[in-house]
Image (cartoon, rainbow, N blue to C red; front, side, top):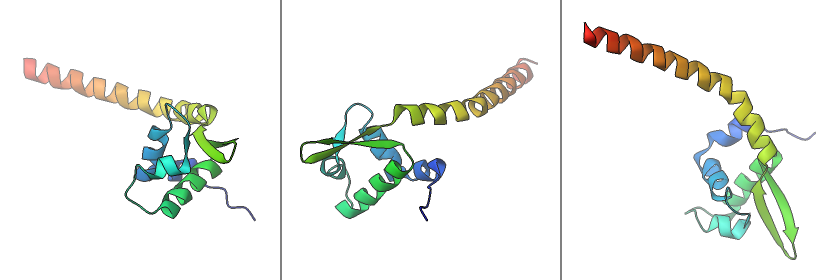
Amino acid sequence: MKLRRDVFQAIADPTRRAILLLVTTQAMTAGAIASNFDTARPTVSKHLQILTACDLLQQEQKGREVYYHLNLEKMKEIADFVEPFRKMWDDRFNKLEAVMKKSTNN
């Protein structure tokens, strides 16, 4: 039985979020990614495995190297899911700001 990881659990970890930020501009090898962290390489490999299992990262073989890059379609899926919540909170904060401004003007 293959365990399917939850994408939000995956991005809850600060190291995995840092990895996603690293590969936003260019594909990187596991070694290049690991060199940015003060943890053991197998630990970074486990994070890469989780991000790949969630389809947040994709692997591309180039010669003997495996490069990791963002799966933009999956990132858009997440952004689309989060957008209504962001809008709701923006609206609430705007209303709060209006109430605060009104109370300071009185």
